[in-house]
Length: 99
Length: 99
Length: 99
Length: 99
Image (cartoon, rainbow over all chains, first blue to last red; front, side, top):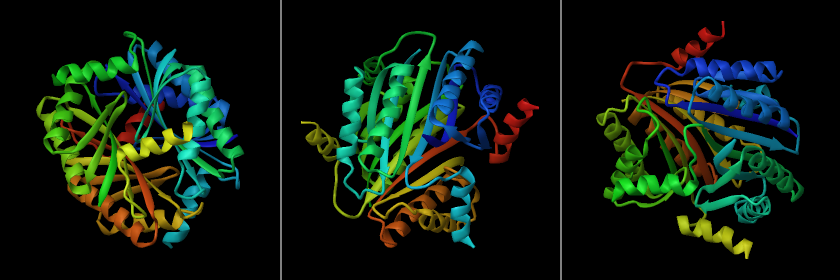
């Protein structure tokens, strides 16, 4: 089952500068071979359900290892059976309507 | 790794009445032996990471089997290493401050 | 325009115990005369669009006044024109399918 | 109060192809003079609290006018008092850690 996900990882209890934790998580996604697109409020991810969710779990484990005591991830995950669709398809589909 | 999750499953392409799909998903959570609490915009879930996420995947599979062509789930998932906390603890902790 | 909202306010930079901030926000919602239902991952709110969003803004202002340097709110907000629906209707509608 | 928002508008009851509604909403954001960045699961928006939320309300009104009976928007909205930060700052801050 192919998914398109949007992932926002929020570390609590480590102050205001959280970018190093987001970066650590981003590296895990890259190492998992997933297509990613970083935006200002999270990361779009494309891949197989199990691979994607294994990477999300690894992010929590890694950040706890780095000393983050509390993590909340906010996830949107979409699956569809009517047709295949990539992250780029979704964006292009809206952009076509704007032209 | 113990999690507290908030899960909102949104079925697309099946009209406006989606409660039967939410109910089908709720039954999967119950069968998985997870603690749940249904609210107006989703379901709080408490359990082990793998058990909880396996149930979420099963929800997507079940709803596609029921004919839903497109599903988006919105998930908040929290883990913490500083102490154990249940869904009820979280609510009680706020209520104590209100008294 | 009537809305049903789910609001999760996340204060950053004030440590791990955030319940007093959630409680302060909850009082603002109550003072605004809004129907609310606190759950483990947020608060369901029912009311008129402008009243509800004015209260959310007031939450951010209040928490910054209390010394929170950074706040992220996660909001789900639903409107519908086909029929009126309350928070309780939404829950009841799923529960009816479970019986 | 300056905000960075992530907005995902979900129209229900109009079938599977929703890009024309997302496009209509995107035009409202542009007309409001807001900085936007479209991604595969929503739109990042930067601007003043009242301007941004007025645009979100206008999106719901517009889509109902276009015949969408039911809309759920999923919103993340961040405010901070410690320093100014743009959408690009947020992304750059993570990218710097990746190099």
